[in-house]
Image (cartoon, rainbow, N blue to C red; front, side, top):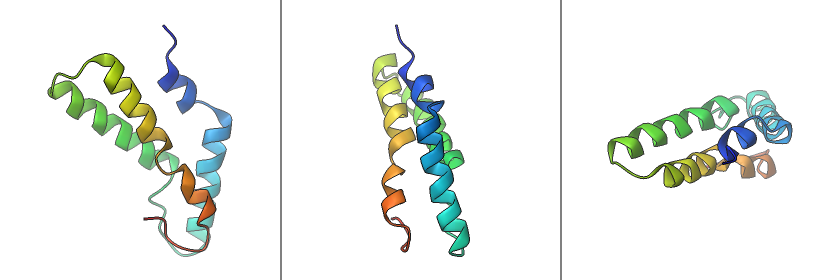
Length: 83
């Protein structure tokens, strides 16, 4: 079975997007909540919660992938905080 979560987590283009988001947010005085560290934290929390609720591993993996990607759209909102 392919470990898509780690494949996406380590994808250089995804990491580059979050670095760019962080640069924009940092340069504009804050809102550095949409960076790579944040999405990894969200993925980890999702995993802990879903394991405690006894969800199956496939669903947990899919949720963690969604958590990793959930702020990539902030790259398009450079001038405003992404909500």
